[in-house]
Length: 87
Image (cartoon, rainbow, N blue to C red; front, side, top):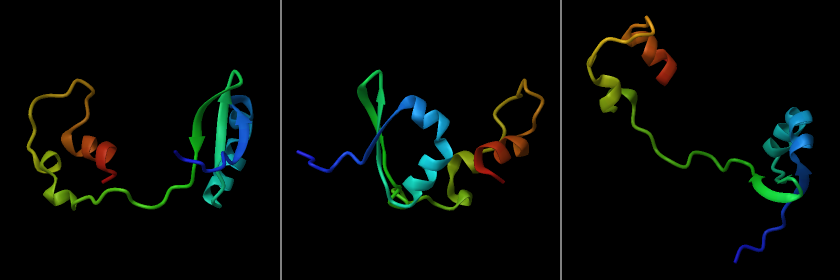
């Protein structure tokens, strides 16, 4: 059983109106338990760093795959790569 303290308790309205402050505080190592209609729904906790190891894009079979068909949005495959992979 996990007995970690819940951190600061806030509701969804406080989260919406103070999102920037909450993000900054989570980045500083604080955690928040978020309530919706007085019930706990999720916890915001600091990220511990990469959880998975990713291979270089050149080894990603989807990234190196050729075109499979035509797209209806008017973008070419390199434009889709920029959306999906950031390059």
